[in-house]
Image (cartoon, rainbow, N blue to C red):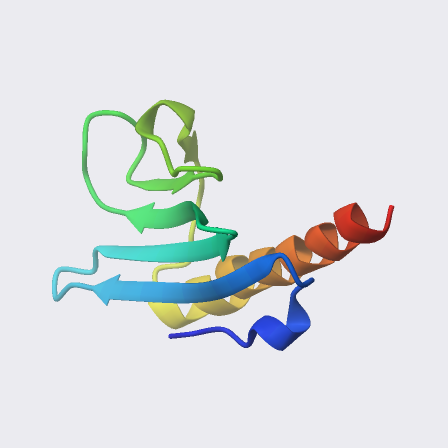
Length: 102
């Protein structure tokens, strides 16, 4: 899903969300942002693995495993999008505008 870059300050060339949902209830939601060729990403995950709890978040700038933080997400992916992902995107856009003007 491509996000409308009109809502972002000019240095942002593109922004998108990638959703992957699996039949066993696992999911990955990735946010991608490009600025002058520099690609940044973060990710909300719900899956078993050895580095964190089943629910965890990989922050910007590169969604690295070492920076992952345990989280508690709703069991319904729609609720995760509404309660965690979209509010984060809104805060991200606000932070980008503040950094451009301040």
